[in-house]
Amino acid sequence: MRDVAIIGAGMIPFGHREEDSLTDMLARASLHALDDAGLGESTVDGLYVANAGGGLFQRQFAIASSLADRLSLLPAAAETIENGPASGSSALKMGYLAIASGFHDTVLVSGGEKMRVGPIRRITDMVAAMTHPQAEYPYGVTMPGLGGMFARLYMEKYGVTDEHLLAVSLKNHEMGARNPFAHIRSVATRRDIFDGEMAEINNPILADPLRLYDLCPVSDGAAALVLSTVEIAKASGKPYVTIAGIGQATDTHTLAERDAPTELRAVTLAAQRAFEMARLTPADIHIAELHDAFTILEIAASECVGFFPRGRGGQAAAEGETALGGRIPINMSGGLKTRGHPMGATGVAQAVDIVWQLRHELPADRQVQNARAGLTLNFGGFANNVLCFIFKQGDA
Amino acid sequence: MSAPAPLPLYRCAHCGRLHHPFHDRCLDCKRRDFDIIHPQGNARLLTYTVIVSLPEGFDQPALILGLAEFENGARALGQIKAGSAKELRTGMAVASRWETIRFVNGQPIHGIKFEPLE
Image 1: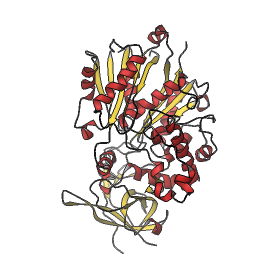
Image 2 (image 1 turned 90 degrees about the vertical axis):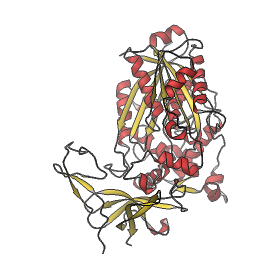
Image 3 (image 1 turned 60 degrees about the horizontal axis):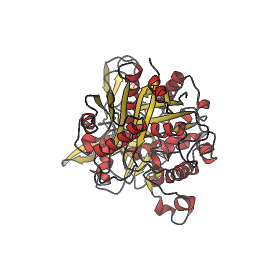
Image 4 (image 1 turned 180 degrees about the vertical axis):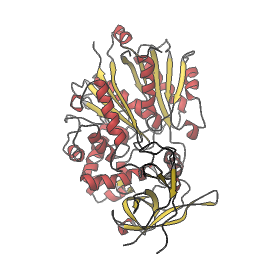
């Protein structure tokens, strides 16, 4: 297997991009990544496009073929990759394998989703279609509903409190406000959403015990990466990042069938496999982007990947250990909570943010000093298909 | 007391593991033969939530859902018949009913509804 480098990264601001089609967004993010890689007028050998819901949201299939044409990447090989909200990470994995195996020398990985396409109830229903078609979906369960049931159990079992959830939300809002690519760029205050006289109105319960400020928004957006061999990356003379480890694991489709519904077994396994491949440990990681579709998931995932002992993640967030300048900064992009969660884009966007961190390109109010290794964690479904990546700063 | 909801449970004919929903191979021993049985007795509420942002197809302001474990160890998601979450607590006993859980194209879809017993 050959070592794989990321030589280009690009993203467009997430949000409500009413004027853009799905292909517009994918094309713009891809052009940013191609330009960043210095491939402005060149092509790539392969194109992997992550998209989860184009068939549902836009009645658009074969999106990779469309993007190859739009970007004049012909005759590059092109595939669309779908793995629910982890589609972006799966596309990145496929791009990695194509380079590592020697099948391709340069590939473009582009992820995008256009989700703000109608009334919220319709979008909620479309997203809920990833739950089990007989044992969950007919009952009216939603992804926040699964999050609410998980949160209640996890909070009771491990002593996670509303204050801990609040700490994650405030941190991710603060970081999102500093991120020009984030969907939600407003700072939230404790008074606004927790103990002020308007808190119940500003921050209503949506899936008990989770509130509005515990949930990621519905977003449009796209992000892209260019991958190559390390030899090509070194020859470019530009800073690059290597993919040092990848882990993936699945779990039961329904939450009810897990041995313990509080255990995110696929998260634990995916992280263990990624660390094993990278020959690193959680203590070696300087920055992480974790799948915080709900605040409780950032806390649980920070424990499952090994940053904190079980039951310690909430308190660690409350004590600032996961903030900028803390022991292990988490979601310095604002995370899914405020950057947004356009499903096909998310895994790619997480990696883009880590690439920028490891190239030390971000403004001081988001840059983790001396970051040399980073981690991303991306869920497909409710933690039933999870990918974990470990990235390292490339040698000069 | 009425009978528990006739939810189909798939018991592995080799190792005895209970499954719901159906799997083609046992989650433990990977064998393919199952006996279909049904829940026994009441159930214990493991967790619950009140959803107020409902998907299309539900014309009501909120929906209470929960996971419960039956006396034979099987677990299932169901809707909960309660006025509010204040009537609920984890670990409480619930009965299960087999009732209409939604309508699709005007046709009723049946499934589990749990009802607090305390």
